[in-house]
Image (cartoon, rainbow, N blue to C red; front, side, top):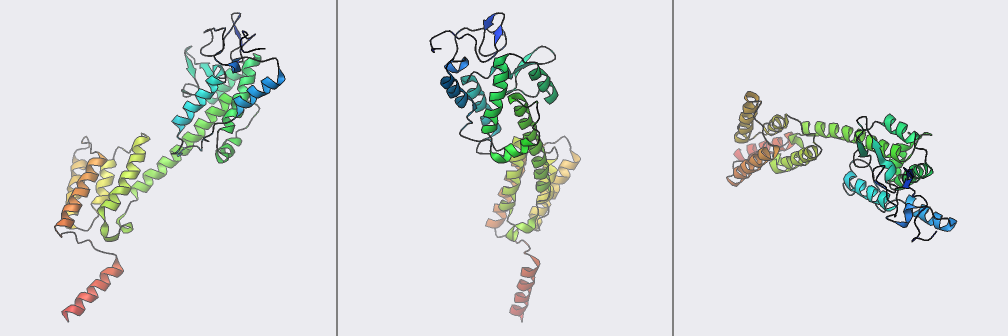
Length: 302
């Protein structure tokens, strides 16, 4: 079949009301494919060429949650673009209980895993079935081997592109929840022992990095101000210690008073620099160093 010939039926969606459609919601019928991949060529070699193009994974591979080089949002956009270009996007449109149509790539939340399995099981058209299979291979080929292994444990006879995408989202969320819990614990356990001479700016850099990650994930603790004040009030320099003890007391008295972590960090850095510049920053060094300095002072006095 030549590319200029009207397709007998597109790969996506099959026949709706006697008319072929290639993409979008069921019923949005079109008779001209967007791409030559939206229909079946009669020639086997041409069909295999389309198949290879459709199932070949993206150049960039998704590693799962925490992939800063190729985040989930970028991965989802690239996946959707490939599905549309290869005429496989139609099967990813599902209907929720209210009759609203959602695309599973951009909005998977309205559908449970069981609901997706049920809706894809009843897809009986040969084009739908093929695209469920082809999209599964494409998605798997677009993931890093390590993330593939994480998903392999879920492999069942009901696996298809939509089920695999939902599993990938659930696995990423599971990883993200665990990672965020760990990050909150790490933030709460920040101590001064890691910083020589109680370097405030090194400490606030760590606080800022962890708080920013939690904030971007929408998981910044509501008591972040208290947590930061508690960390900073443990510095041994009296002026600094008192400042953040007062701010901690202020937050205790006014639970409704929201302290932005960036504001607290700015106050800490500014106060620290002022004390350093005025030669008033005399942090107590680690025990061994303190003992050596005391002995040296005694020697000088003698």
